[in-house]
Image (cartoon, rainbow, N blue to C red; front, side):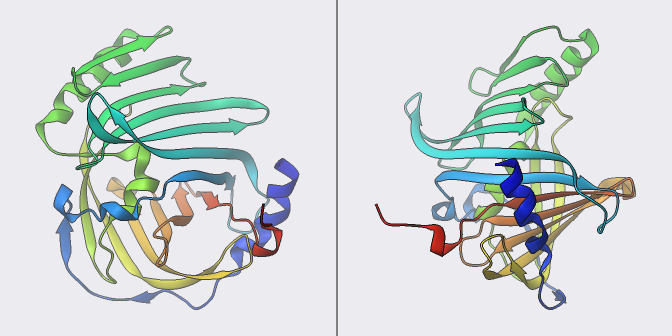
Length: 263
């Protein structure tokens, strides 16, 4: 898999015309704004890597496997999202998130990061957080406080942003204001995402896909995130993050049609 991903990476950069910019409106996202039937169900695979410049060699290669399935959770219609991140022969991150299918608010969020050395369990129904493994007391206190405060407003799960983005009502020039919360990584906050325009993108299968281009500017000038979202499937096909002068890329892997055979 590693060799295959490295072989296909160069073709991701075959882009078409420049982004066309447009002026538009602002939508503060609530549950009624979400296009719920657009959520992709099944298995998604992304490759993540970094570059010092746009043209420098790729480093820190990570494979991200995401499984999305509909389910019933404690008598509620729900969506379960399972994530596994593998890098350099080890699993560096795992997450299991359950969202309420009615409004996509979070019901459960379990997360493990190898670099942190512990697992966090957030139960949004009982409003309790617990941990497995050694947790610094300061981190524990801050996490519990942020979790408690997150219930003041309706918010969406920031760790599941690739799936949340499939639900948005896109329009060139439109700005989305989204109340996001990534459990265990700061307080809930409102983030603004601007649909800068449209652009064709050549994906790993060799196809050219017409995409919306959406930009998130981090507060304080601390970098930016840029997303290419398919207008047909609404899936995030590419992400480019600029941070401290370096770049991080995330690409959705696609299988060319000629490699898909009937059973």
